[in-house]
Image (tube, rainbow, N blue to C red; front, top):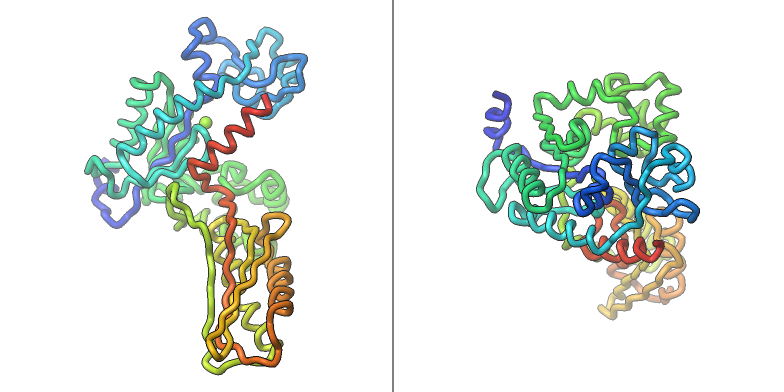
Length: 373
Ligand SMILES: [Mg+2]
């Protein structure tokens, strides 16, 4: 059986992606048995300006989906049962579910209220099979929280996420290294996580409808047509994704500094170094899907006198042009042009992790979400 080969590869990472099924609606059906088997729509009662937050699978049959205005949902399914969100109940269930994840591994990355990646390569239970862990987790969620979850197992986050979607709801799917190319080849392009609606349309214009079509294009073609993101498409369709499962303790700052071999007193040369440093940092933050808001510049003169100057921007950004412009301005404002510089450094703080949400960020989102209802 496949799984044996899979588990033998000790150096391969084992990632599980868990995604709860119709989460808020499922909790309503759990707590109010009269709602079971019925089209349940959570968020925004009819006649109010609300939008659908989640709906039960029974409601999805009518074409209702998340983010749809409640009035539209009502037209599609007049006998649907519209209920207000009960965030306290959802929060309690999420805490229970995440506590189960953490019994297996500390490497848990929450992606939303009902979705997380778990790295179980080395897990607390010493279970060698990620598939068995995923089965156990799903069973425990069913027994202890009385909800169903779908799980995907694979050797990276991208594939684990795709896998969890393949047998939804209440399903488990494993994509082994051997299967990856086959699964990705057959996948419609819109199902690739990270390919949005507009890119999907663009790809289709070039006749790219499935992973197999995308595989035929080489790297330079992808970069010519899609820019830097072309790299990502190239590697993802080959099942390559090295992103780590990052935990609650995500990075708080990122910086880089250079000590020059020869002290510099030429502003133009300092600018060149600044461009190199900021360029590297921008590569790093885009790779880690981070936006930043605070810049700190560090300047050390030949006599070791060091000054640091900071600036907080009006909005988060990861844009090189914007950041280099600000950095140049700080340098001009703080540099005493008569003196020689031996070290130049830049660091970014006040970071926003675009995809990796920390538990704390999740809770903040929650409060905001809660306010809207
Ligand atoms: Mg879900």
